[in-house]
Length: 411
Image (cartoon, rainbow, N blue to C red; front, side, top):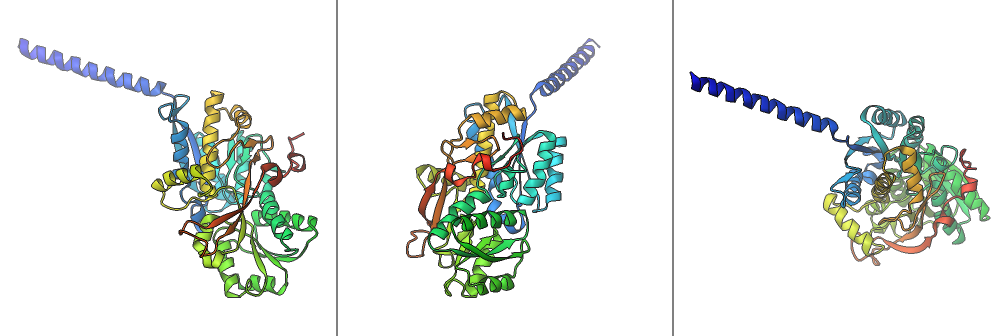
């Protein structure tokens, strides 16, 4: 009997100890700081799917690099990544943003390709007073009428694309233009900005035609452009639309007939899809190229260990924006949006994509842009050797002056 009582006593003691341990674990978990949640939202499917593949992996690399000295944490908090496909639909993007900000506690959203989606998400972010960093959207209105005190525009915009590519083409003799334009906010803004550049340089615009997003048949649009006799056909589209329009222009013999194509937003991944025999000679503007220097080559090697494909400037843009955001959170000692944005503007942007970049008051990241020409097959040494550098354009020349943007809160 005494033994039995002893066993029961030990069992009870073990049970109490177990409950105590569970209670202590629960208390510790309750006291542990919540993760810092950040999100990348993109058109991961559809017309821009090939461009955006790998952005989650790029964000993971940024988290690794930002926290390598702090045991994987920022301000003692782990970093949690959310991702979502907005399907290039503004209403879907707005719904995701609202849920992320309100329910999931996301503090920063990046990516946001497709200008119509980016402008819709911008309104939600402004309403919540939270951070959105556009890396994929191009409309310069994001730092103009739709600028935000907690928003940034990171990789390129329609003004820079127009001035770097457009001015180069006009200077080379392309003084008459006809536009093939994607019929939504991005295409309209790009056509508008290039038109201003062409006219300012003494050229003329003979007309334009607008095509639906993600159309498969460009024949009627290309025939109109061909019949215009314009020296330059400006492709104010992107992604698969650009690839299809260039391929079909080749089928119509447009370039062989003497007209030139201006790819106003072309990515390295597009060029690889087109192949050099089709894309050779194309002049374009990018903010990153994998083979620029030893640092870009080393970063690309790391990236390809995670995602075996050539990174686009969108991919590296997500890395760069996330890295700078996390540095700013650490420096600010808080995830408060206004305090973090103040640090993001204060700290120069230095990473594999950008050197001594400056985030302006209107949210525009100002840094060098590059004018490239696609190599011919004879000039290329490997399947990834696709560009030759024509010019480096300083940021203060590539981007719209702050005073001209009409950002409401910029005095």
